[in-house]
Amino acid sequence: MEQKSIIMVITTCGTRKEAQDLARHLVSQRIAACAQVSGPITSFYWWNDRLEEDEEWQVKFKMVASNFERAVSVIREKHSYELPEIVALKADEVLKEYADWVSAETKG
Image (cartoon, rainbow, N blue to C red; front, side, top):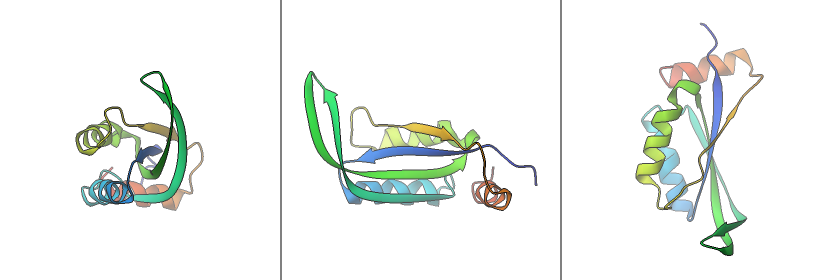
């Protein structure tokens, strides 16, 4: 199997339930091969000219790069934030068998 480009897409959510629901949805739709929810984490950021401090839950999705736009669309649709964090990191090195698994599970 030809190795596809693998990315990790990261977002944060305001509740554990929202993070788990988002993770479950992207994996069940085979947009992501897997998702990991961690937290709580404390985030500091500027919003509407105010320095904010919030407890959040982070979700890391593993997928083929060609699924990024689908992931963005679903995250934006289902996310409670007006402007959700959606960051993709390209995996420079990936175990071939893992990359093959991600590709197979996402129909990549």
